[in-house]
Image (cartoon, rainbow over all chains, first blue to last red; front, side, top):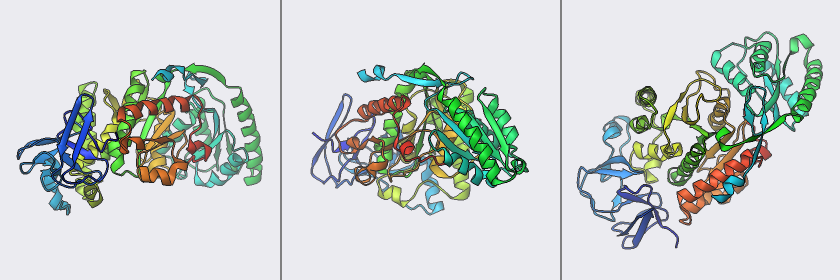
Length: 102
Length: 380
């Protein structure tokens, strides 16, 4: 069966959509011995991420096995993870300064 | 993969013991004033020759001088013809003398001494014929993957670059290094936020400091200028932070220890994984071909070029064009060498495609022509 999402590291908190996914559908993401099924809470466009499990505010969000930012609110499994609920600690501070609003 | 062992690479042994995977003669111009004549000589014998040079050679600057010398010494070349005007700072005899230290036959001519275009073309052509004949008798020698140096360039990136094509080159890099080979990439400015990650992979504390500092400087420059490799398109495409984009780029580095930063030309002093940084002012072309040729100046035999938007350019060494975007692949298949779209289509894993790409590298090393070579995309 064709994969519909890609898991880039076994420690990741998120998977990335390989096609446009719809809220309510059950999606599998797997790599090596890890396989996670999640029912999507939101529509997830190609290239966008969804949470593989529940996360709490302040938790580091891992993709590629590395921190891409911290959760700015609690995030449920299957929720879209993006700039509205995840923010880079490191470069986030500078964003407004340089007009990068997202 | 079982077929890996079967790929026999019969290379070309150079007098300085370098091993090349191609056998060509370089025609080098030392200033823009000698470019037209050099090109006419080279184009008279396109088979087995390549043209490059330093258009700004009127002034002598160490970066570009070192670069054309390093390229002239490249293992792909059996010999070189250097064409100058006569009054430029980047003296043709001096360039030839440096390249000749490799033990290869090198000759230099100056247009002002020969007496204009036609006489120089005649003399130069005669020299080139002699060099081509010499090249045809180059000594052959068996090569193993441990002899190979591969560079990685990414250009025209899109969402598929970080998800598929860059990770695939990272897997191939690991396989090459496990077989004893050498791998490099550049583009430190695309690695914002990756300083600590790469420092952890450094072979010693000096290298850790060096990479941390190089990336910190690139970050500082970005903040000073308010310029980032980051925009709304990235966010719309699903990237949440600069780090996320950088990590997608970093996947091209594989997972092996970082040996160091290459700040001068010539083959790396040790095998393994390196980050390459161009010598000051050495850029003689633009964009991706320049990146490929910088790798060549560091001895790279092959360039891997991942592109999402479908860049068509090559460079002086064989370029394996890797595309993972299915729509782009359909449009630009004629220029693609490696189809990484099965990852995005959910039909293959990064690991599987990385193993295939490594096999492709070995085949190109063994003589398989890439599209960039067939189309003579020898941008320089």
